[in-house]
Amino acid sequence: MREISDIDRMRSWRDGLWADCSVGLVPTMGHFHRGHLSLIRRARVENDQLAVSIFVNPIQFDQQEDYRKYPRDHQRDRQLAQREGVNALFTPDEAELYPSGYSSYVEVEGLTDCLCGAARPGHFRGVTTVVSKLFNILRPHRAYFGKKDYQQYRVIQRMTRDLNFDTQVVGCPTVREENGLAMSSRNQHLTPGQREAALALYRALQRGRRMIEQGRRDPAAIERAMRQLIDEQPQVQVDYLQVRDAVDLSHPGEVAGEALLAGAVYVSSTRLIDNVVVKI
Ligand code: PAF
Image (cartoon, rainbow, N blue to C red; front, side, top):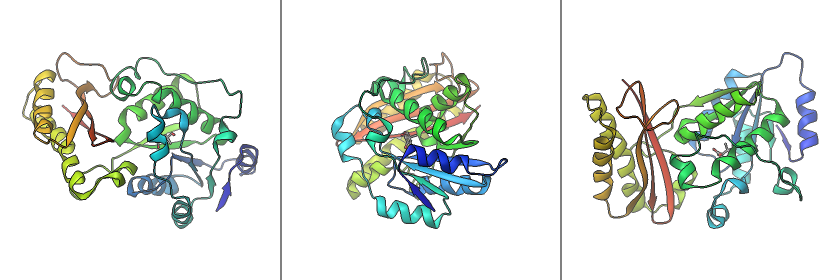
């Protein structure tokens, strides 16, 4: 495995690959858990060469404290990447991606106005900017994103289409712990009691799913029932809990087609998100 931290050397690695070599990219912020490994494993089997990037992207954090606290473990990540058969590990630092005088950003309108976009101003602008830079540097045929960050997946898919990147955006299923808690780097901030409490989000989404499966179509009633379950758990505060159209993320008058049930909660100061998609 090559570990590369500068853009020119990363481009040379890419330019040096044979003509019809397929290239997969898994963009990450490091601190790998089983969710990342599932993306890496899928990308490994679907591509001739696999690049993984690790960069805790400062411009997608709306709070400095969250950026500072974001877990990092480079040694362990490097070992895991090596073991999973990654060919190139791209580990730029902030000055490499955002040198002084940096002033260009990529923004997707509409899809970013709601859910995490509304709750975290500037977050998706940071994500789409860094992902476009990675796509330009690595020119991957396929790039892999977890559907736990469902809105991010849709926003990147739209950006890729709108800006004509020659990359297929592959959305991968959320990996969960045995009890249902979605894997997240942020879970490590939780005490065992908080982990248990955090399950309220998963249970609320499952309650919403069951209601739709039983024929309920009123988004407001489903949102109320989901919220009720979380309100019973004093350690968990709702940031948002909504029913949306799973394709364009609009607020449906009535649940139809593919529905997204999406939630974000705070457990103490740790923000967790999760979602389920229900096909009708
Ligand atoms: O999902 C993430 O870890 C990040 O948002 C991403 C896509 C690597 C961009 O920094």
